[in-house]
Amino acid sequence: MRKLLVAALLAFVATGVNAQDKNAEKKANPNKPVFTVVKENPITSIKNQSRSGTCWDYSTLSFFECEILKATGKTYDLCESFVANKTYMDRAIQVVRLHGDCQFAQGGSAYDPLYVLQNYGICPEDAMPFPGSLYGDSLNNFNEFFEIMTPYVTTIARSNAKKISNQWKVGLQGILDAYLGKCPEKFTYQGKQYTPKSFAASLGLNFDDYVSFTSYTHHPFWQGFAVEVQDNWRNPLSWNVPIEYLEKIIDNAIMNGYTVAWGGDVSEDGFTRSGLAYAYDTKKVPSLAGSDMAHWLKLTKTEKKNMIDSLGCRAPEIVPTQKLRQERYDNWELTDDHGMLIYGIAKDQYGKEYYMVKNSWGETGDYKGIWYMTKNFIVANTMDFMVNKNALPKDVRKKLKL
Image (tube, rainbow, N blue to C red; front, side, top):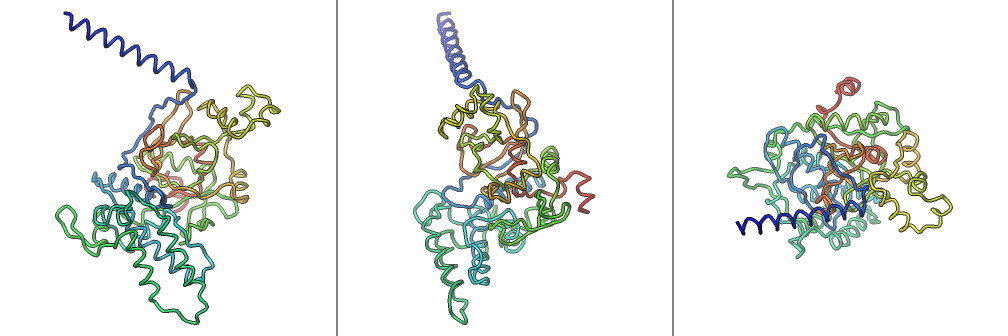
C-alpha cells in the first residue's frame, strides 16, 4: 500500500512538473504553432550535407528515394558523392568549353542527379567512402576541396594556349577522387553484383516520368524554358505555369502519395533556423505587434526580428502574386538558395496550412531536421520544383499533353 502511495505521489509530482513546463512554454510564447498533420508521406533518413553546397544533391536523391519507396516499398540510401563526382566533372568540362564564360561552383539543380542517374547510374551510400572520411572529417567539408579545384578549372578554361590536351581531365578526376572517393565500376549490394547503370535500372524508376515547374511572366505560360539561374547550368526546361498552379500541383502530389523536390529562396527573414518559414508582411507587423510605425522604424534589426518571432504563427503574411514574384526575381531579391524535399501538409491551431519539408542539415531545429513552411512562403519563394508527372492534376497533364 505504501509503495502504491509513493508511486501515486511521484506520478502526481511528475504530472505537475510537466504541466508547469507546458504552461511556462505557453506563457513564453502562446503563438508558437501547434501542428496537426493533414497528409504525411513516407521519407528516408535525414542526412547532413554539412559544409558543402550540395543541397541539390541531397534533396533530389531524397526525392528519388521516396519515389522508389512509393513504387517498390524498398528503402534505399543513394550515394550523394557519386552524383557530385560525376556532376563536377561535367560542369568543369562545360566551363572549359566556354573558355570560362560561365560559373564553376558547388551548387546545382534537381536535374543534375536525374541526369547522373540516366547517364551514369548510381551506387548505394556504402559503395563509396563516407563523406569527409578521406580527409579526416566526420562529414563533408568542401572548403579545401574547392579552394584546390576552382583555380585548377579556371586556369585551364582561361588558358592562352591554342590547343589543350585531355590530361587536365585526368588531373581533375584525381582531385575529385581524392576528396569524394572514386566511383565504383562494380559493387555488391545485398548479395548481388551491379554496375552503377545496372543498379540504377534495378530501382524501379522510369526516368522519363519527371518534370519541372516554375512561374514567371517573362516567358509564355504553358511552355517550357530554362530558368535563368547560374546553377541551372545544364539548362533543363521547366514548365511555366500561372502562380495559382504552383500550390495546386504540390497539393495534388502530396495528397496522392508523392513528394516534391523543391528549389527556392531561404534567405528571407521569415525562414528561421528553428524549423519554421513564414512569408512575413513587415508592413502589417507593427500594428499587430502594438507598435506604431514611427516606433517600429527606430527599432534595430534584431529588435524587429524578436518582435516578429514573438508573433509566431499569428504574424501577418503577404499574399503572393504573379507581379510580386516577377519583381522579386528581376531585382535579384528572389534567389536560388536551397533545395529541400516537400513531403507533407500540416495546419496550425489557427487553421493556417504549411508544407512539411525535409532539410539536409542534420537533425537540427525544433523539429529534428524538418521544416514547417507556410504555403504562402513556398509559393512566394519557389524558383522551380521537380515532381512525377503521374502526380499532376488531370487538367495540367491534359494541357501539357503529358
